[in-house]
Image (cartoon, rainbow, N blue to C red):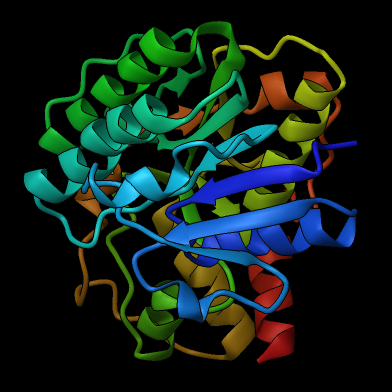
Length: 282
């Protein structure tokens, strides 16, 4: 069983999904965010900002069995990324007492590969952009401050309820060029939350976690293929000249073998299952 006392810091959409799963299994969940009134009933609401060390003094004297950092930057600027992934990690772990298990949500954006090659947790990470560099620096601070008590879940592109930009693009008829192929690595929001719960349970059972895991589904796929599959389900014709491939997402294929070997079983193992469920619910 996961510890009865879990702090979810930066508790947005993903943190709420995780917290609801933990609440259902009997854990007490504290959600930390700047505006905690948005948290569901049953969460202990903590008003604080990961980027503001003074606001985190509210945690002084409190002890948690587990801490999960699910903060996300408010925009695509270097200052926003550093505030969450660098300053936020240092500020939070600097004020916490005891030795809780710590999980941090990171990103596959730390990988620089753009040739469609496969990457895993042991692949080189030499990000060229500020976002990947901030993420890596945050991971380094996590290891420095929490050591073997910590693990990072590097998530691919999250989609799911409330995250339907791609579906909106397809409904509007926006495709992308088939060549050169650009692979996308995705994860449904519900699987992302379930993976975090899975890792927390292993940690609570005394099992040593790896330093990081890749949180992606079982089938990296070219963005052109994903868009056109969705279009087929909707009966929409796409114009592949309207929108280019998402260059920010890179072009690599991420392997989830470490998660599978640990025993995790996906709710939505590929984009067809995930987007099919979204379309059925819409």
